[in-house]
Image 1 (cartoon, one colour):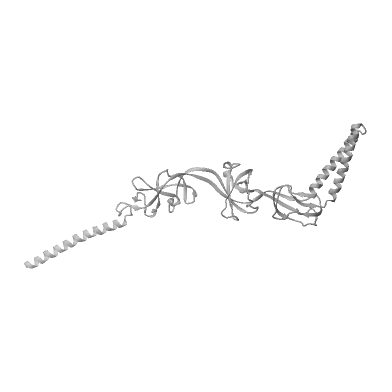
Image 2: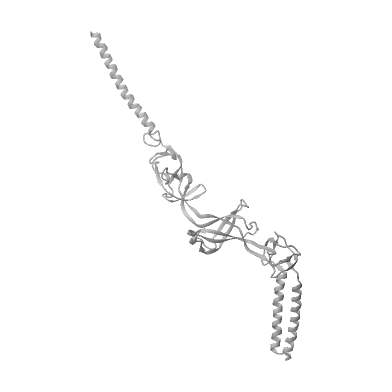
Length: 351
């Protein structure tokens, strides 16, 4: 009987020890789970989150836009005689550069020769009557009639000369030739087309919202697909005074010197217009994150206690690998550029 009571006491003590062990074990397991659930850098975590940072700085940010356009000749002249006739000479070919006043072609000179002979005759008669007028041998009215005939002959001769000996009115390049030597010109297509390409011009359609920000003389830059790697500089030569009601754009005429004649009419160009330069906060673009589900842009700012604040910002222009920040940041603030995924508001960080 005594032995029975001893066994019962031993069993009761064992149950008590097991129950205590179970309770302590449960508390240890819960503590372990809590430690695993705590985000890094937050209370209960193993330590601060390792991040990389950059410092927000003020910088000059060009406010520019890029527009598409086509290179055009500054001036285009169609070379044609005033009347039909046989083409006697062809002096230049397509692709030739010509100077202002250079002879391009000559027409049959029969009418010109006749006009020259009449002019010589009228000039001689006028000289004779001038002498007689001084001696009183002819009336003033007779002299004036001959003088008028001479002026008409001179004007007619000069007109025929211009339309028989065809000269270029501009310096440029010959871009078209419509006839051959010996052809009969019959008032159809021009004999030649000459285009002035120093300078060239581009007509650029710009949004009406920029109308007050663009001024005559503003500098622009442009590139063309036909000449990769080259950048050309020009300026706004003229701003058209009206705005297109359908496209809500106005036209700016851009002039480019083109001293080496590299730009040719018809080339596709991208024109960069800088409206102003603004002093703004700039940070690396990787520092600007988009909040899921809201579209709000934020940056992770590291405070003096090495903790993170998630701050909404208003980004401006994207310049290469950087963002202009219009609102939300101050100069000198530290922003996270690497390690965002493990961060929450108040997270502890280490650099």
